[in-house]
Image (tube, rainbow, N blue to C red; front, side, top):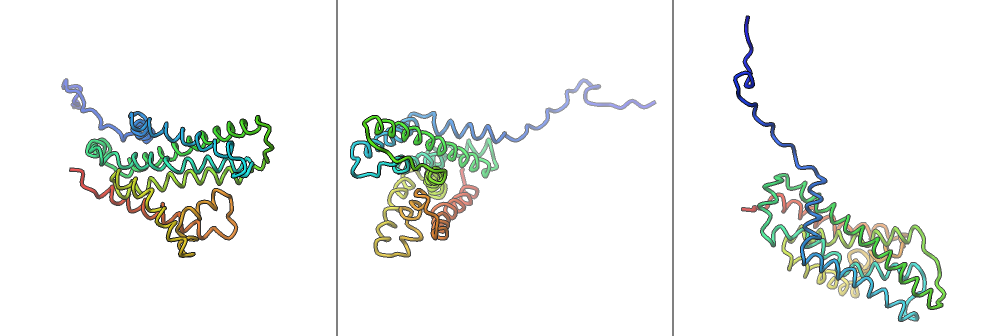
Length: 259
């Protein structure tokens, strides 16, 4: 009769099993904490909120300079968020390199593409939350205008809301792309403001630049829900500002030495 021997029968504990991969939801929570739990991040998010509320006073206090419609007020909120919200996304992607925490991050999760995807998901969640906040501020602005006895045209449609949401998210994604590509907070933030301004200036001299690259033109078509005849230009602009730099940034993140 043969007796099979196992580590347990010999008094030896079995080797612990290898830990599984970090759940993606946990990676997203970690990136959310990085984006919101620091003092600098909270101040920046507070500035986004204050600038949105502050700019909403413009159509209330200067009614002759703005169309007194629901859609017009919503667009003011969108333009306000397009100023600082991309900076939040930039800092989320450049923080690993600027704060020299990339080594710790990629040691915990060696598959860097999962970290990049978690940052991207967190950026979109932040953008969606900011868009909802902008909608709340818009409703408050409309309430103040209505309480003053002003007549407002209720022309808000599903298309206008969709264009508003896409506009906010596109600006967030542009910040994401610059942050992933440049991997330096100061450089990416400077580029976030300088490049759109430069192409807007070039657009005044070139219709090709204005209609195909200048985001102040192409993405305003998105905000205004004006897609007729503009889909190719909008698509090219998204590829130019988001898809190409983001893809290059992902490749650079995967290949960059963190030693």
